[in-house]
Length: 162
Image (cartoon, rainbow, N blue to C red; front, top):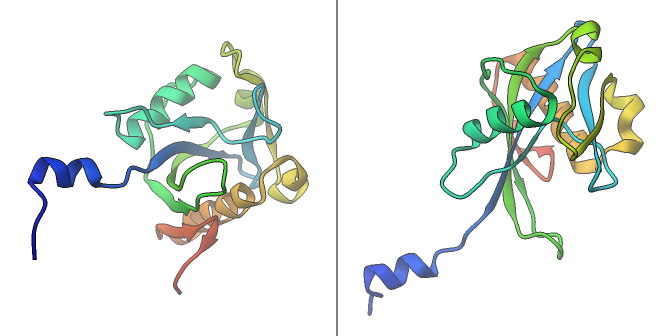
C-alpha cells in the first residue's frame, strides 16, 4: 500500500463547518430566541466558528456581539452533526448552557448588532413555526440535557443512542 506524503494527506482531509450557540432559559422553561435580519428563521444567540477559534470562544464572542451579555459559559449541552443539505456543507453545531435569564433581563438586552432585530423568551412549542425544524429538535435536546445533566449527541437535531 502506497501512503501519501504527510502534507498531501493533511490537505486531503475533509473540512467541516461549525457553529456555537448558547441556550438561555427562564424559570418557566422558555428559551431566549433571537430574530436575525439575514435569514427567515429565528435562532439562539451564537454563530459560525471562525478559523482557528474554539466553539466555546465563538459562543462567548457571539453572545457579547449579538445581545450584549457577558456571562460565564456553562457546560456543553448538545453536539449535533448537521448533514449537507445541498446548500450548506455538513457541520457540527454546539449548544452551551447559558443558564437562567429573567424576563426583565431579556427585556433589558441591548441589541447593537445589526444582524439581530429582536430577542425574546418563548416556549419552544409556541415558537415552532419561527424555527428551522432541526433547531427546534436541537433545542428540545438541549433542554432535556439541562434536566438530565447528560450531553446530548444528535444528528440533524435528533438525539442518537439511548
